[in-house]
Amino acid sequence: PGWLLSPAGRPYLDSILHKNQRRVFGLLERPALPPALAVPTVTYKLFLAGRSGVGKTALVAWLGGTPVPPTHHETLGIEATPLFWPAKPRASGRPVLFQLHLWD
Image (cartoon, rainbow, N blue to C red):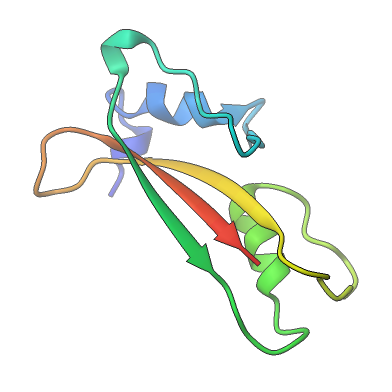
């Protein structure tokens, strides 16, 4: 569980942070890792659906490291937010980079 904060996981965490805040990546961007730390990317698309005003947009903002809107505004259409998260699965000894496309 504490792999990201270990010396082995810290370079991966640093690739997604900027000034201790999560970097915001565009749809075609990804974290830059040195060739020695290159890892496979696993892509998932997560679609959040639910009633109006329950906090879907606030959840995506919180996970993406952007400020949570202080007031409720209805989301028109779909907003796609890319999110990268490095992890080291227990079954594998090698880290992977999860690329999550959060659709709100």
